[in-house]
Image 1 (cartoon, helix red, strand yellow):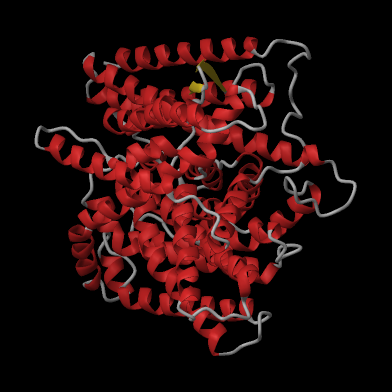
Image 2: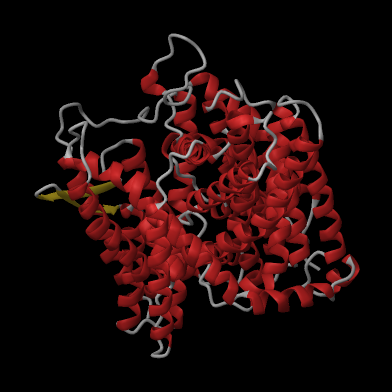
Length: 639
């Protein structure tokens, strides 16, 4: 029997975790994005375990599962720094930060257990990164065809070189945009040149790609022009900057509202498979039974005990968090209990939503920030409602309520990030024949490992760079401060609701639009077509450069299919797309680590000063267009 859950694999997964967690926390605070670690972890695992000898595809899968879970946990950067921004924390305390990250992440693992059968086994979702990781793991087996290996390694090398030339040397632009005005209305079109997104789009397919492209067209061709034409520009910003601010503060909330309604609808539609999955899980009553059944999850009895234990940990943490506001009394204990129940109930909804979105677009492009926006709105609205009926302790006040809301959000963010990543891992496991319960154990270990790394990394980054508008020491250079866009947005929303300053109109528009798209999808399904509402909402919420690039990758996939791609060439296309994702991901992690050590993200730039910005834009566009043509020709030649 092949080795699967081994001590050396766990140790290797923990070591890989250190790199990915640190790099992703830095990258997230710098630009608001992270690099998915499943595929890079799989590549590293294969290389190391093969050198040690006796490796198997199952053992490699466990390593990438553990490392990817810890890498995903770094998404707590989207919430925890907001506690610094509101002045509740002056640094990131180790125990509180570790426990909230680990407990939140572990709930994400547990919530995906009853969802696995419904969303992986019984679903047609593409899971682009999960499929890509499986292809890479299979490529390590001796019976993999030389053509597939060449596609994987060649794509990876080309993507790494181009990423180094763009992100590192700055010779090629990473994206380009065009801004047009008509009166006060601003129209903007953007396209990214990311080869990883091109590969992900190829794996997503034409249906999801076009739905996301529709969302981008609605965002930048309808909503942004309308709002810029009717909203004042008191600071007299240039059209591009004005349009970007309108998208960030208004249109993105339309996408968040649409994601919320579409997520509830999707979850409702999935209740049948979810219930069947729960019923199937109930039949797995022991670990011994799980070992005999390679499609068995952790027994629900153990899942229940773990959930109860994590719930108690969260309750104690929340009581300790609220104790400074009037001590431990009935009011604060009751509020802590409400917070713990929110983590469990809202957390399950968040897990299902994030898992579904990751199944459509992959972990890298799944908009966890949008789900966090919905979660913080629900939490803050609940607390404001409790205050209106006298159930919210007066001693906590506005400041304490906002801080507590953001603290709970940190646990929900960890749960969302892990759920977002874990179902990709479980899809990988399904394709390579892994045992689900062993993967789930590795996921839990990954959550604990990653949580131990997060506090020191956050403290080092905060003390070294600070956040924009929040510098820990006098005399620090504000130009080097980390932007931390998501924490600032979460703080703004929570404060806006508590202080009655949030505009609900955009969220309502998004919800209404979701209803229209849901009805349209139901009509189209009668004619054999679909328009996934979540995908449209994702297209509105994500930056246009990401959405358009994904759509281009989906178009390449469609062209290859129309030109007669067969099963063999489709496999080559999948391996090539996986190679593009691998190459850019590994190079992205490396460059973000270099930037962290150097203290600036342009440490390797060799672009001469004074060169017009249009030069790297044109060069980047030409290289990207050439890669699209080469991708399609490579796949079609494989026939």
